[in-house]
Image (cartoon, rainbow, N blue to C red):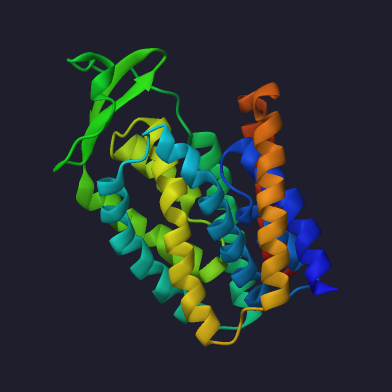
Length: 272
């Protein structure tokens, strides 16, 4: 019964999350809690969904050369540490506190969805389209925006890394992807083009989730059958969401999802 519930919930949440561009785990875990699953058991399934979505999105993003590996490795050092710490802490507290942590995460996700910005004007790169991609030895590079090549370089790295640790702790504690924090921080604070920020975050959140899952597995909190169902549902839901993503106005999706997340946060907090 749990496996069937996980399959249906992950299918729906992954499809909706993909449409809005923040992934499905931030909806999956609250949905499972609403359906009666303890928060301590729902969190690992959320991280499984994050890892599955990251793997599914990785290949096309690498082909398009929009993932910055050096940026990803740099941020993941602190994010995975935070995820492991969050998972350890979550294993020592009761479900009531975990549900409230999940409510805070849902509210933060709502703010992040609204905060997402559009691409800014940048200086055109010299050398034409052959310059597209990350630049060796630096957290910098160039990407294609509206048929133009624009350059970028990471800024305010220390503050950005501190917030990446917070995103990791959130992922490890609540079982949701830290991507809803990592992408806005990378784009707005660190001055990375939103397309590169989103792709790099999606490519690396699977590593963050895996760090939390290792700890949760050692704690005996991972259900193998339910996890397999979540992987299947997340992959299928992600593909369905991506297929119709272009036909629905992104602004409408973001505002609608933000409203849903606020309601979810309030209900979780009150019910806890």
